[in-house]
Length: 249
Image (cartoon, rainbow, N blue to C red; front, side):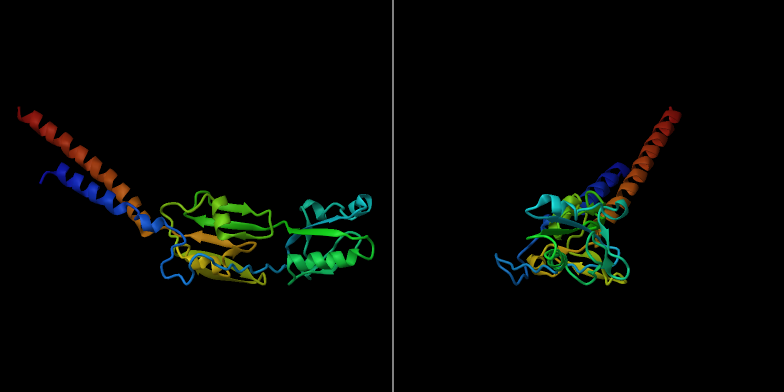
């Protein structure tokens, strides 16, 4: 067998082997799922931690009075900082302990405190520092900022450019902090319908999501290098054969 034929066979086999099977790209498959069509979701509400930043907006029938409470936020950071002792300083109100509370609970606390000063106050609290980090096989790795108080894994992936064809969607890892001290790793399978009913379907602030590559990616990378070397070797042999043939004349 000639070298050129051998090279053609190797490249053809490598190309076929490096193709990603269609099923590998599918999400929310019904296989081995305990759910059919209707799947209940579970939203685990985030509890505030030190160094979180809150945006607090107050409104009422008397806009002039309510605007008086919407003073500039702490030091240009875009919100009010939850201090290490667990308290947050809100204009015209006493310091309020918020660590361990949800956003809804803080809204109720602020509303209750304002009712003594404003008639029918309406309070909206948002978490300014709600960000998620995406690493690995996504279209746009990096940090995404979340404007709402909740986001699910698929919404976040869409913002990060979705999983690439070489991403392993059966073993997605989420690194999550607990009590701002310890971190733990959760593994989820996006190909199963069960993810929608999982407590990790909704992401939390400061989550790190890692999409690891399929094994085929390493093969493709190595094969591309091998193909280049093989092509150069083939070219060199052809040139040598041409030179030898020319010298024989």
